[in-house]
Image (cartoon, rainbow, N blue to C red; front, side, top):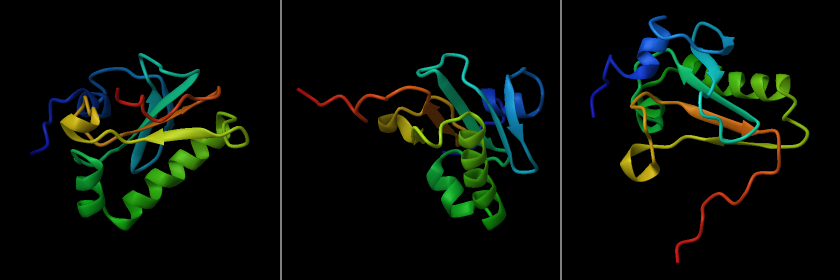
Length: 121
């Protein structure tokens, strides 16, 4: 799958669509999800053009990878999630539930979270 420059996160990065920014540096942008699934639901996206975590892991520079995970840790701490715990999710591809074809992770917390997946019947 090739990168689509018209995906919503690319538009946010270009400033064409506003976001509720919580963090930004040279490599990443983080903002609150518009449809939160927990009291704290923040998306962290690299500024580079990566479709998925597999793409990012293969093509991302060491500085980009480090910056993304450092941002997750900093944001979790600033949001008061570190002591109580939180979840970081990267949905990948159709079967993984990825809705936007720009790599991103979800930081979820602020309450006790349910099971990772609902068990199939």
